[in-house]
Each structure stands twice: as C-alpha cells, then as structure tokens.
Image 1 (tube, rainbow, N blue to C red):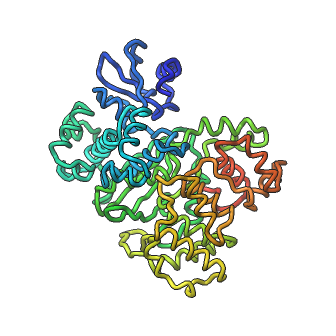
Image 2 (cartoon, rainbow, N blue to C red):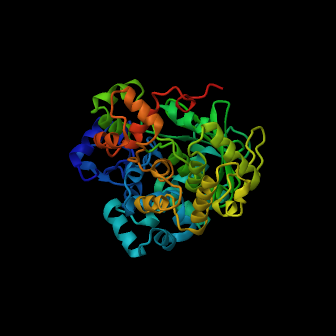
Length: 491
C-alpha cells in the first residue's frame, strides 16, 4: 500500500487507525516516522514519505514518534493472509527465529538461500531480515524499559541484543532517547504493578473486535491443567524456546490486557507473537466484514456482531494432536482425552494462585506413549500415533513458517485424516484465513437455517463469494448455535 501515495495521504489526513501497521509515514522536516492515526497535525504532503515497515523507516534514518508509538502498532494483516515466502519469513522473524538462529537459520527453515530471502524482503519491505529483527528487538526493549523495573543490562539481553553497547546505541537511534530517559519518561503508574516476575502489557488490535466466540472457544475447549478461565481472563501455559511461561489474556474495549510470567525474558517477543497469533489480533476486520456483508445471507450476522476473529493456537503441533482427539466426539470428551495425555506426558509447572499444572507435551514426548493406554477406538489410536510420529520426525511441519499447501497435503496423506481435520488444522494451526469446513455438521446446520446450501458440494460452490475470508465466515455461521464456544464466560 505504501506505493499508493494518494491513498496513504487520505489515511494520514483522516487519522484512520484502520491503516496502522499497513504503512508508516516519515516526516522529512522532523526526522520522525508515525503511524497513520498519529494525533498530531498532519505535515504537508511534500514533506511526507511512506514506508512499508518500521524497519525501513529506521534504515532511512527516521526515529519513532514519541506520541503515537508507531513501533507498537498492530502488525500488518498481510503476514497472516498471505502464504508466500515474504509472509512466511515475517511470521518467523516475529517468532524470534533470527535472534535465535540468525539469517542462515531463517533460510534453512524456509528452504531458500539467504541471498534470495534478503532480496525479496528488501524488494517488498525496504529492509532485510537483520533490520526487521533489529526493529523488533527495539520494540521489545521499549516494552521492558517502560513497563518493568528490570535492570537495563538484563533488558538488553532479554530483548535479544548481543551487547549492552548495541542496546544503548539502538534505543538512542530508534527513539532519540537513552534507555534511562525512556524509563523516566514513562507515565506515573506505568511501571508493572502486577505480581513480581509478571509483565503487564497491552496488545493492540484493529477495531471492531468481538471477544465472544474468540475467548468463548478457547475457554470452552480448555485442556485441564494447561488452560483455564479465571477472574475474567483466559490463562494458559506456554512452551517457549528458552523456557516456559504462563499468560493471562483479558478482553478490553481498546486492547487485550496481557500478563506474562516467563522463566526467561528472552522469550518475551516470541510469547507476544504467539498470543497475538492465537487471538488473531493482526486481522483487518473492515476488509473481512466488508466482503462478507456482500452476501445478503451473511450481512445480518455480520452487522449483529462485527469483528469476529478466528481462534487460533500458540502451538501448531499441540493443536494437531487435539484436533485428532476431537474427531467425532464431544467437546467434553476431547478435553478429557487431552487432559489424560497432559497428566501422563506433560512437564509439571508451578502456578501460584492458579489452576495450571502442566505444559502440553511435545510431539517428541508423546512419541513414547503406549497406544493401548488410550481410551478410544483402535482406528483413532492409529491416527493419533501416525500424526504424532509425523510431527516428531519432522515429516509434518505445521510451524508459523510452514508452507500451508504442502502441510495440507502431508496431513491429508496420513491414515485416518479426513477433510474436516485438514481444514480445522489449516484454520487454527496454520492460520489460513480461507480454510473452510463444509462437512462440519454445525456449519451445515447453520447454513440450512439461513437458507444457504446445506450439502458440502453446494456449500463449497456458494462459499466462493466469501473468499479469501471463508474461515471468518465459518465463525459467523458457527455463532448462530447456542454453544458455549460462542459465549464469553461469565465466571
């Protein structure tokens, strides 16, 4: 979008928050860059330059605006929508792969040369993987500096910087303030008031956001010991590269309240990225709802409760296992099966004051399970062990950088995996916004109630008008049923 100057100018002049994260506005006369909705008086058009990423604006010599905090805007919805190399790379960079494994590690995960990845990212985003990772490190550092009392040396290494000197130089360059000045400038009461060792953050999103089916789904399907709804928040354990964590997420009108307890602060950026992905916070509801409203039979549903998101997951392998456990059984039965796996094979953790007890077991840990210990039909046991073996061996890869179509094909080739499981995994684990489940009984019942075709083949044909947002159409149709997954818990 940053190449469409007229459209960018209109967005800046109208302070349209819908475009935050789509592009960044740099001001030649002040040397700063802003989000489109920055509340200051817009500069003259001839003094504006538009960039596709914060990293590109920083590389061009601009520093972040201290008022609108453009580095903290919602991410571009493109990286969830698209499935090409650039989108896959951006999802992996957000997950911290460059900080942990370097650009060669990013290239190895994507199956391309480092030169090819550099070329494509530079061409589209105006910055290479190192610059994009650097921008993310700066934002992580700012979060820790402004919201915690963590010593600056610890902040530097937790944010992914190789040295304190690099940390100091980067913060000064990006924010035109030293780390100490950033902390002193934070508003009174901004410093973390949560329990010791807990970080309190605000996760932004594009409005509107309807939390009912989002948090309702996560709470209704929560695995005992791994997830719970407590005191108005969805809480769960997180398996992270450097350790583990516990997150509590509460919906608010303007943001998602996020409280994170981590065993290693180096996992902060990755934990935030996973929470944002699970809650689908980088979606563009105006684009999604606008297209779905064009179908008269969906328009009333969208107008009644706009801004529905697709409830996703923090761990794709975990969800694939849970999807198999949920085949042809009730939500309660699926939770019971998953809970038994957790107790038998999950790592125990402490949760003072809460009810979380375990991490969900990894595919490697589950590879050792005895199929005969599973209280389910023999054919489903074989399906489950087949999925676990494929995940543990790497034959099936469902991570954020995975090729969606290749993952679909490999999953479909496994014994006992049908179209419903493939599409549910594509929707919630792979994050495909166009995933569609025409064989789902709840979806077909909802479609019939609205006068839509109810047979899978006819429903597929009709759904072409909802593309590329069919996963969101599924959420609106599912929401016509009075099931707990569609209601925000009240206790």
